[in-house]
Length: 152
Image (cartoon, rainbow, N blue to C red; front, side):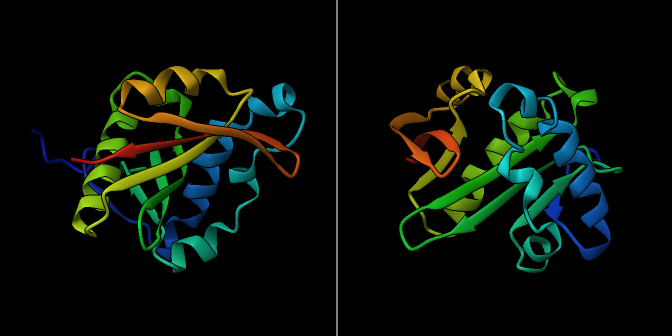
């Protein structure tokens, strides 16, 4: 496996906040019209998430990121964003593998995530990576499908 700066996934630093915002906006902007609201990741407090150690980035410049949060019994993948200009280059796959490895390193046997029901592309992607649907429910203005992946 190559180990160049484009492959590494590292904790985001304060100077990465503008890139985190830009990549998130680029990844989610096209969903606004489809779902009728601004996707939650676009409204996140990126500076606070970075300061809390929840954001991990890849690429130089940043082309992808995950926002994760550890709980007692699982790791929540709160957001994953890949710049549209790098789709199809394995960035998302590497980020999802990183999330699994991070959960294992923290001694957690499960990763959870949710996606908007109108983001149907995700409903095809997540099962390919071992995620199972848990439930569909409304969370405020968002119609979400919740997933979990049990790690071996």
